[in-house]
Amino acid sequence: MAEVVLVTTAELQPGAKLDQFTIVEAIGHGAFSDVFLAEDSNGRQVVLKCPHESIMGDVSTFDRFRRELEISKHLHHPGIQRPIDFTSDRSRPYMIMEYITGETLRALLAREKRLSVDRTVDFGEQLASAMAHAHSQGVVHRDLKPENVLVTPDGKLVVTDFGVAFMAGARRLTWRWFSTALGTPDYMSPEQIQGKRGDARSDVYAIGVMLYEMLAGRVPWEGDNALSVMSQHISAPVPPLHEINSAVPPPIEGIIRKCLRKNPDERYEDATTLQTDLGNWRDLPLTQFIFGDEQTISPPARSDLQLILLIFGISAAFLTASIFLLVLAFLIGHAH
Image (cartoon, rainbow, N blue to C red; front, side):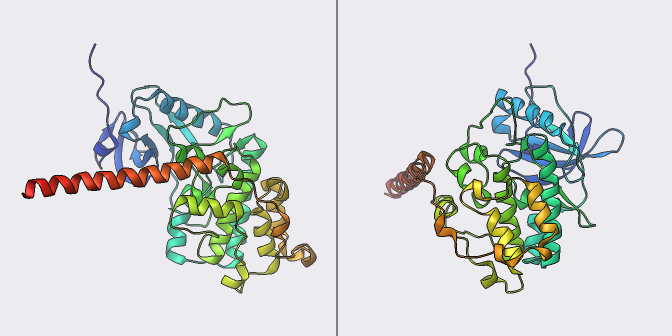
């Protein structure tokens, strides 16, 4: 039997061939996969999502791609990237998706820092609309962040990467790396940090973080490491947005604060109700937006996951120090 030769992401340079596709350029890099713009034999441009070579041929990688495709097939919304197909070769899985012209929301925010209130509300409504559709199909994204949102030249938002999404009734899969299975610390809801699966309200929370970032030029909670940020998501109050950007109207800040409630029962129940409030924010009564009431919410107890993260961080630091000392001892020994 002939040996299977895998095409690694490092070999996918412009002009390289992958089956019937020709690589045009690399357009994204994720925790477990790289994304490439490619052309098929008919000249049609598509996006190829290819796992890193370290997990090529892994059965769970193939299952993950297949599940992402099956989940995405249930979603038909202009604000959600459309999957086309994925390879049936378990030794070299990759996903084929529609190509959308534009840039990531992350790139836009890096360039413009803060957005106007009107533009933020427009983007918020678009995100809420896309996720309302996903939630109506029983799909929760679980990793909403600016890197997973594309902005087209005409200002339309498109949500991408349902790689860690789940669908009601679907078998749960978990990556070997817990950080990938959970999401991204800056946008993770308290319940996700506690190791819970999360639901539509977890996506609402992530949208709230992004809305805050659009208006403040920064996420609500920052820290030197992931554990610091995750701890603040669980226990720290929302930094007053109007103190960072005085142009933010109270109803908008109130909507965002409701998205960012620690207790999911006190958030918007789904993206549909969030979309409604964003569309009608000028007519909302100011009395419902009373700030400084977060002390009424009991923060979740310290979870086992946090303890695991702490142990992991300490172990990583110890390992790094040990390697450094070994290298130093080796160099000193050879110097003599």
